[in-house]
Image (cartoon, rainbow, N blue to C red; front, side, top):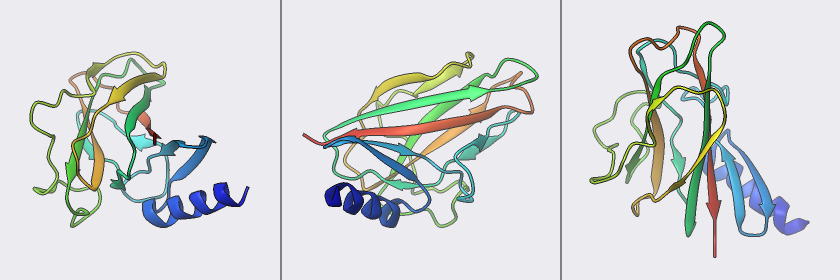
Length: 155
C-alpha cells in the first residue's frame, strides 16, 4: 500500500493536475488535463486547435492512449496528434516551436467520427515531455469535447 501511495504522490508532483491510477504494479493510467489545469475534459469545439497540458513521459517501456470525443449537437470530427519536446512549453495551451510531432510518426487520429472510447498503441520517441494537439475538422460541432488518457507500463 505504501508503494502505491508513493507512486501516486510522485505522479502528482511530476504531472501536476493529473489523475494517475495504478492498475497493477508497473501499469499506470494517466488522465491528461486541459492546458489551464482545471479539467480532464478538453474543449475541442469547431475547427479550433487546442493543446492538452504537457506531461512527463516518464520511464515506461510500453505506451498506449485511450481517447473519446463527444457532442450533443452532432458528430465529432477531430484530428489528434502527439507532440514531444525536451522542455515544458513557454505557455501551456499555446503553439510552441519546441513541441513537434516526431518524424515518420502517424497521427493518433486523422478523422475521429465516433463517440465511443478508442485505444491504440503509442510509440513515443525518447523525449522527456509530451502533449496532445487536437484540431477540429470541417463540420466539427461547436460543443465537441474530448478526453484522453496515457497508458504506461514498465517492464
